[in-house]
Image 1 (cartoon, rainbow, N blue to C red):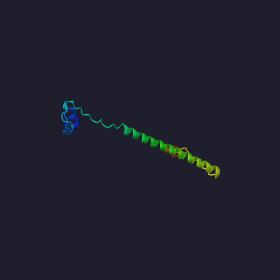
Image 2 (cartoon, rainbow, N blue to C red):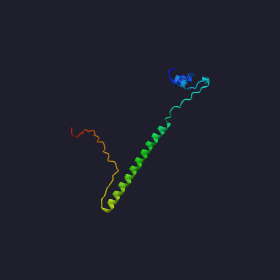
Image 3 (cartoon, rainbow, N blue to C red):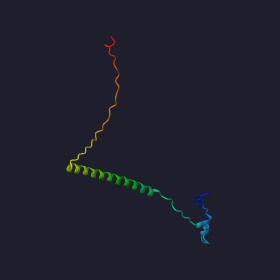
Image 4 (spheres, rainbow, N blue to C red):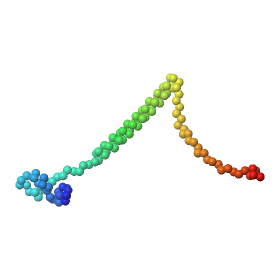
Length: 109
């Protein structure tokens, strides 16, 4: 019984609490109320909300920048004759396969 919680569960009153009890009080009828342990639910939910909000703000910002860039390109192409082409087709290089050499039977006769 080294922790104060263990002492209170066993019915022992620590000395600092015993001094605060007014004289003449029946110690057997004293109820010691402990503070509830801290809940981490609130801070965790707040952190998740802030993170989700930041992600949403960044996505909206990226969308707005994309719309503005597309508008600028369309205005410049309409007024100045500037063209900008976006090629979204992927350019994949085909792997080079070495073909086995066939023996030419005519060469060796």
